[in-house]
Length: 83
Image (cartoon, rainbow, N blue to C red; front, top):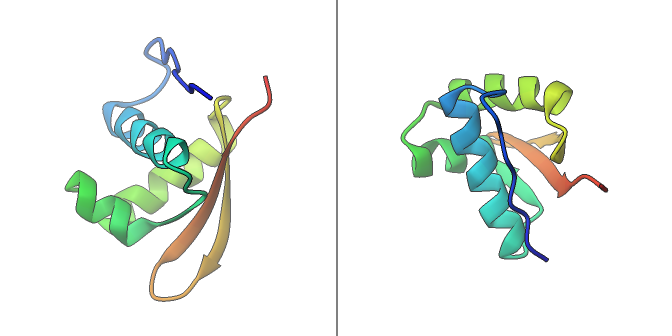
């Protein structure tokens, strides 16, 4: 399944980077993502990642993003939205 999205300036640069990261992870079979690992891989702070993921959970049409659990870092469950 190929998940390529056209963002059309709807998201900030940071949000676009996070969406691309998540999309790549989903393509590789991932579904759960920890804020601290996203932050490390993208050179962001965990707080930046968490804030942006909370926003994306509300506005992102391409991905379904849910805060899943907290254990040493927030874990997010991410799945492609049905089209």
